[in-house]
Image (cartoon, rainbow, N blue to C red; front, side):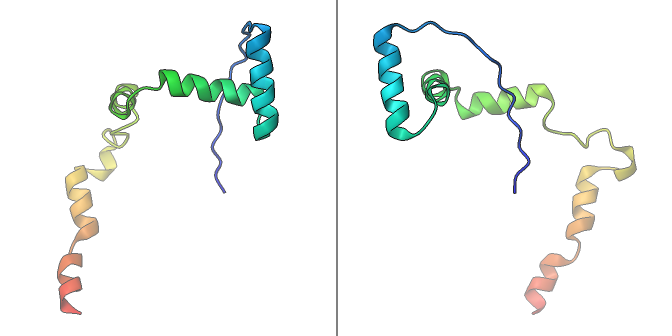
Length: 93
């Protein structure tokens, strides 16, 4: 089971009667909320490219979270210690 939480912000928009009727009809047919349909339409129209998401995550500090962990030493050395001998063990079987 996932413990992912999505923070939503309430936003008010104005729709004409035709737009609202169309959304209501699709919501009823698909058993989804009007809000969900609007969020999906926004994502489809204004979604960023995966590369842009990656670059944004880099800027936000989502990567290299262990870089300041002095007790681990070099991350390369840490990974090598974890993998030590495993390649040879595979061929010995």
